[in-house]
Image 1 (tube, rainbow, N blue to C red):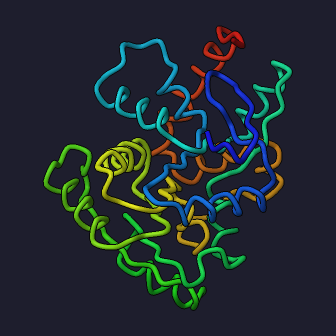
Image 2 (cartoon, rainbow, N blue to C red):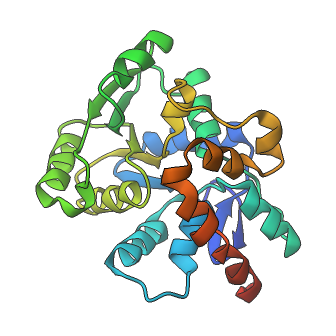
Length: 253
């Protein structure tokens, strides 16, 4: 955890406890440091993968190591905040989508070196049209990149080619976190690696976010399930409920 920001522990993870502007200032500070830092956005799915009782596989182990190496962990879930409240713990929700919008819309990325891993081929053009002062250089890995060693090596070479200040990983969890951690371990890449999921798609209108009232009520997952049922039914209806037993079993250290 960054020494510059306070944190709160819940389910064995240290979550950032700071307002959005203070977080953005800390990301700016990290972007100007030598070396690479990693920012992850824990949600229910991530915590189930990290803390579930099933026998961990190779992917889960690599995901856990990435989380352990992260400089900042941002609570991306109002469901997690509600479960923490039951335990008497206050978490600040700092969703990847809100933080991404803040960085672009309030000028934190203006005239900075920004790499984008993932997204569609039109994304840099559409970002430039909306944010003229932000230059994004994109690398699009193939599907199944986590099991494609040459493709991972191409990501590494791309990121070694410049002195980046921000690296936006938009290839989904656990791919973003695992590959970002591997790149960081090379010691040859600079910048803040932010694992932001579908945040840019939401910001550009590629995907619809839940209405604000659903977000505030902790029901964004319901909206996403209804809009993408075939892709998300297992995540929200089978894996997600496991968070209840994880929360009940957890005891503060």
